[in-house]
Amino acid sequence: MAKIGRLLTSMVTPFDASGEVNYIKAAELARGLVRSGSDGVVVAGTTGEAPTLTRDEQTRLFIEVRDAIDSEFSVVAGTGSNSTKEAITYTQDAERAGADAVLLVAPYYNKPTQSGLYNHFKVIAENTSLPCILYNVPGRTSINISAETTIRLSALPNIVGIKESSGNFEQSATIIEEARDGFAVWSGNDADIFPIMCLGGYGAIVVASHLVGRQFKNMMQMLLDGSVTGAATEHRRLLPIMTGIYDTTNPMPIRYLLNQAGFGVGSPRLPLTEPDPEDAVKLDKLISKYQIDLEI
Image 1: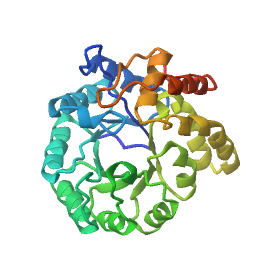
Image 2: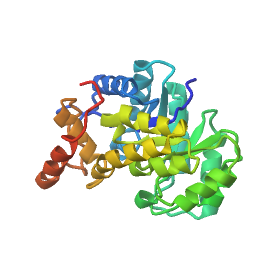
Image 3: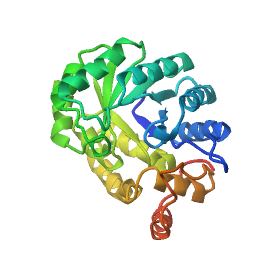
Image 4: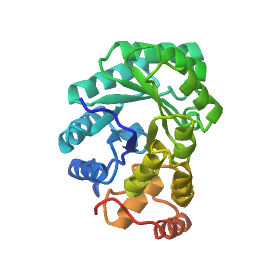
């Protein structure tokens, strides 16, 4: 099983002209991402439009992507759900498909208490041997996994880390300080990579690494080598693309930019759409300022 890695790209799911999953292009994209700096990929996450994928599509994506990249690179399967029973089913599908770990988003819409969150993740972890990464993204789920709940969950042996997308650095720092040794905190926001790693976070599960993955990896390595000033300079240089790809709903901008760069991934599935024309102009201007690391 691959080590999960510090830099993971939350991968777009390519669609063909009829809106069906393009598995050949998904394999090509995964290979391109690990060649351009990523230690692994997240499949069927937020950026992969998991809510509009069927169970069969998700499972086949896990299989195809795992087969496409060398075993040294990790495949993390997005298997979270607001139904605990369904999340267990998806997680067991991913385990059979050969995934190296799973990413479990906090239950959305039904707004559980912290006790409910704890028990939701605990039961899923007890029903798989795979490493489980929690995913805290209150802007999408309407619920925050508190630092206290995360710290409790870190005591479970196969809950190995959290993707923190809350933007709450006090919360991230508390988790880093008080969770069990070896529990990893990945930044879930591109613009938070530098501050979270400065606090002692492990890495990042992000989106702009589709295009500037090698540049992200270089910034992260500077931090690991103790060159904080150099890393800060790189962070500031990369900040416009880190934030600009979220000016409208993710993954609409990154999908558009991949298509514009020549790596055709198709249009999003409804209810997502192509960016509005004015947003597209801004994205074109944004990407013109950066070298693209992904091999097209």
